[in-house]
Image (cartoon, rainbow, N blue to C red; front, top):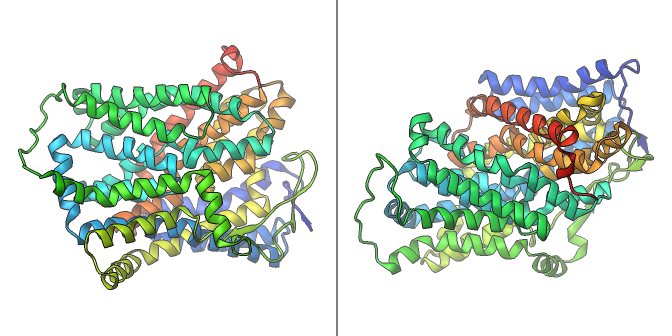
Length: 538
């Protein structure tokens, strides 16, 4: 076994952090420069990470290569599988002509582009995030916005902004469940604290979303819709997270938000809003058009139910589900102070081909095509066309995950985390920033919680701060990092067929993301020192 060492540069944390941050800075710089493609930037960053992990951190070469291979495989499955399957559903809708009817149907609800964006990027995206997570809403919502006529880059940016607060309770509460498992804290207390921390942010995000789309003046014209979407989402999220736990928070909040806005539109019309076209769409035609998206929602929801997932895993057979990565599985020891005592890290590649969220999307695409009269041979051609369109993006995602997994198993992420942990009384401010960084690196709030959740708890205890607040703040800050995650940005580019524009998208969301996480840090400082009574007792 190889024991991680977090201060490899002459025992100095600051110098070690500079070394650990170098690949991250390199990748971000290449993204922002627009001079290289996403997969080239990821490959350069991976090469730098391999050199630092082996040459500075002393990680044996076979472990370095094994960690990279693990990340590459994870990028292809489940992440890449989710992306290609989501876009397959969209392509089926386009090829059958039903998406044109969907656009007309949405237009009959409201001809206002601002409300359309609110319904799709925030409300519907939140529902999909609550059911599946792992990049699914980014792919689906972005593709739908493109189909409604929004330019590709703007659609990507809007989806990334909308896909923030729902991330905390994604995939039936998986991030909170993971956080509870690594910290030993009450899952109900963590759920309640996260729901309280994100309350104001859930209200603000719809305003922020439409301000990005149309500017301050036009956003104010539709403030009732923004308040209805954000307020109903925030209230539902707060109540359910505090009463029943994290499992259905995302699903319920997304549905309530969507229905609340639709109800508002029955008696309120935005100022200077274009009138909805008076198209006569028969009920049968509308049902046919919405069939792929109804089946997608149904399949994703069913696959997210724990009992269904367990049944599918049993059917596919345990020997196919969990494959230990050679050398890497329990070959790396996580070291103190991240854990109480050195602990071996698992490295299991879950080949859950049937119970994967991507498979639910794929089956919904197949079922939609067959019910819409598409022949199996034609469906195969549509899927092949989807793959040809995004294979470069799939490569970029796989390389990006190889980069992230190497950083994780080398302990470079822990070095950066220890820098935040050494901020003393200001630790509550930096606690969500560490969550932001963790998700920006890994692309997953769940993974970030597993990596840093215990360290947040240990550091908070040593400083006399609520461990519950620190752990919850890590997850809450992580949702803001989702919008600058390179993985999410590459997924958005794949959905919009705008490969090579990753840098422009990153530049457009970087400043808002930093601003929001700073506000989150200030909020956590207030919770820690001014109003600690708002934190549940674990």
